[in-house]
Length: 272
Ligand code: ADE
Image (cartoon, rainbow, N blue to C red):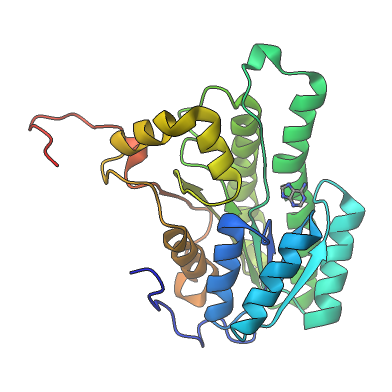
């Protein structure tokens, strides 16, 4: 299944996508899948080395790809990201808000600085990107798509990352509200909630913060009994960003092997 071609290379023809956190991990995988479906891709991140390496990799796959070194917490960086995308590709049709980050700590020990840092990246940065790209999409009068990458545990919480869960619930509210507010511009706004996907990026850090036992516990608590494959998230993201999802807006779709269901109520014995 890995490397399977799911979408036509015509699906996103002539479309331009910005992917934040696109240099590594799940962001990189989504950028690659959008590119293979025909989109031009602008990668955004704070560190130039992974951005440059990913740009090179995607270019070798015949994907039109650029990058901008930018911190989404900084509105000037965000504006420069949009200007650079327009300068290089002429327009923007898709925004994937994938950049985010957090650290694990009991909420009672959070410093004001730590709390603000997580809110600033995950909520404020996502809003700055969405507003700047949304303004450009409104100006273009061709509609557009915003996809927010959240988490699968929005509604049940996760101990140790209260700041991140709070920020992501803010983005959930933003998703619903902008879906209504921007429908008149034909801009669709959706969110996805991935479960545990092991990549070299953020989720791996989170997994290792909890140790191998954390990953094993998640596996056991997931009806499909495994972690996600990055391409599985990339397929969902590509579908939601494509005209195939033209009647879907304001949705939050979990992709977690059923993990949010827990074990359900088991009247039959489980067997492997
Ligand atoms: N990836 C993680 N945090 C980020 C930030 N603040 N800006 C851009 N990319 C990021």
